[in-house]
Image 1 (tube, rainbow, N blue to C red):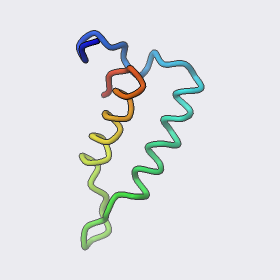
Image 2 (spheres, rainbow, N blue to C red):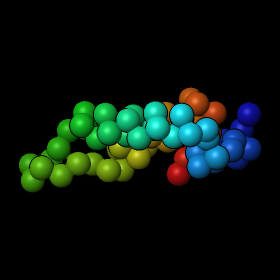
Image 3 (tube, one colour):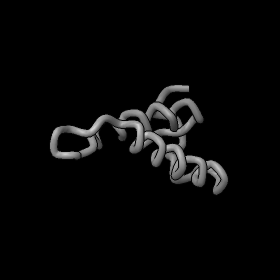
Image 4 (cartoon, one colour):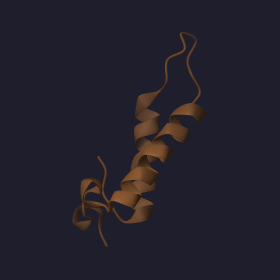
Length: 60
Protein backbone atom coordinates (compact mmCIF):
# COMPACT_ATOMS: atom_id res chain seq x y z
CA UNK A 1 0.00 0.00 0.00
CA UNK A 2 1.35 3.40 -0.94
CA UNK A 3 1.92 5.99 1.75
CA UNK A 4 -0.70 8.19 0.05
CA UNK A 5 -3.37 5.55 0.64
CA UNK A 6 -2.47 4.71 4.23
CA UNK A 7 -5.03 5.79 6.83
CA UNK A 8 -3.87 8.64 9.04
CA UNK A 9 -2.51 7.85 12.50
CA UNK A 10 -5.44 9.65 14.10
CA UNK A 11 -7.73 6.88 12.85
CA UNK A 12 -5.69 4.16 14.59
CA UNK A 13 -7.32 2.16 17.39
CA UNK A 14 -7.06 3.56 20.90
CA UNK A 15 -4.61 0.87 22.00
CA UNK A 16 -2.21 1.78 19.19
CA UNK A 17 -2.61 5.47 20.04
CA UNK A 18 -1.47 4.65 23.58
CA UNK A 19 1.50 2.70 22.20
CA UNK A 20 2.38 5.73 20.08
CA UNK A 21 2.48 7.95 23.16
CA UNK A 22 4.92 5.60 24.84
CA UNK A 23 6.95 5.21 21.64
CA UNK A 24 7.43 8.94 21.09
CA UNK A 25 8.39 9.35 24.74
CA UNK A 26 11.09 6.68 24.32
CA UNK A 27 12.29 8.27 21.07
CA UNK A 28 12.49 11.65 22.80
CA UNK A 29 14.51 10.20 25.67
CA UNK A 30 16.92 8.39 23.34
CA UNK A 31 17.58 11.38 21.08
CA UNK A 32 20.93 13.11 21.57
CA UNK A 33 20.62 16.63 22.90
CA UNK A 34 22.69 19.52 21.62
CA UNK A 35 25.09 21.53 23.77
CA UNK A 36 22.18 23.60 25.11
CA UNK A 37 20.18 20.51 26.07
CA UNK A 38 17.67 20.78 23.21
CA UNK A 39 16.14 17.75 21.54
CA UNK A 40 16.22 17.43 17.77
CA UNK A 41 12.45 17.27 17.29
CA UNK A 42 12.76 16.88 13.52
CA UNK A 43 14.66 13.62 14.09
CA UNK A 44 12.09 12.45 16.64
CA UNK A 45 9.28 13.26 14.21
CA UNK A 46 10.99 11.30 11.43
CA UNK A 47 11.40 8.29 13.73
CA UNK A 48 7.75 8.57 14.69
CA UNK A 49 6.74 8.76 11.05
CA UNK A 50 8.71 5.56 10.38
CA UNK A 51 7.11 3.89 13.43
CA UNK A 52 3.61 4.71 12.22
CA UNK A 53 4.41 3.59 8.68
CA UNK A 54 5.52 0.19 10.06
CA UNK A 55 2.10 -0.01 11.76
CA UNK A 56 0.29 0.79 8.49
CA UNK A 57 -0.56 4.46 9.07
CA UNK A 58 0.56 7.80 7.74
CA UNK A 59 2.04 10.47 10.01
CA UNK A 60 2.05 13.45 10.53
